[in-house]
Amino acid sequence: MTVSKADQKPPLVMSAVVAMATNRVIGDGTGLIWHLPDDLKRVKSLTMGCPLIMGRKTWQSIGRPLPGRGSIVLTRDLNWQAEGAVVVHDFESALAAAKAWIAANNPNCEKMILFGGGEIYQMGLDYCHQIDLTVIDISPDGGPDAALFPELDEASWTKHLEAKIDPAGDLPGYRYECWYRATPPRAF
Ligand SMILES: NC(=O)c1ccc[n+]([C@@H]2O[C@H](COP(=O)([O-])OP(=O)(O)OC[C@H]3O[C@@H](n4cnc5c(N)ncnc54)[C@H](OP(=O)(O)O)[C@@H]3O)[C@@H](O)[C@H]2O)c1
Image (cartoon, rainbow, N blue to C red; front, side, top):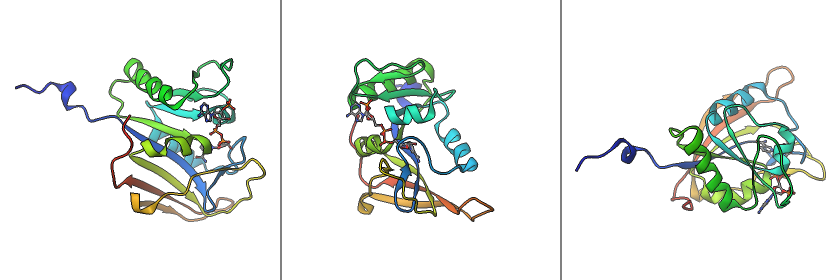
């Protein structure tokens, strides 16, 4: 039996990309509450060429489609639309839209990205094989609409420290971690 190239293609995985403070705050509900240029560059390189699954509030915090990536946006509002967004109304449809985006735009892409915010991480983490996590050494209040990254069950994940960045000038220290799921994630 011959094995075609298509058969050799690794299975599609889902990866969450997130930056959180030590108290798990990821934003104030309308945007980020820090500016770490190098972390933004890392997000760009981790996500380029992939579909991003995000909530409507995260879409609005960014305000535009990120170039070279698909924007799959979850909302319960059946009338909501935005130029450059693929609008979906439930998580199953988000998965289907992300797969369709890959087929149409970048068939070599091997991952879809769970891009936040707090509600969408909560909904999608069970499907994730991997979490690329930036942990920032601050503990901000976040305000009344603060979004949080969910607590992780450490028994279900293996954590690797990838880099530690010291504070510099106005910038706090932070570290890059990669968490790999120890047991298979939910199938999609
Ligand atoms: N630090 C990071 O790495 C990072 C990453 C991403 C976002 N953020 C921050 O996180 C904050 C936003 O997070 P958030 O939790 O407030 O909002 P979010 O998760 O971005 O979006 C929530 C919205 O998603 C839609 N939604 C949620 N569940 C749904 C479902 N089951 N079916 C259909 N639609 C659904 C709803 O939209 P409708 O209200 O339109 O129905 C809901 O209001 C912002 O501050 C942003 O800057 C931080």
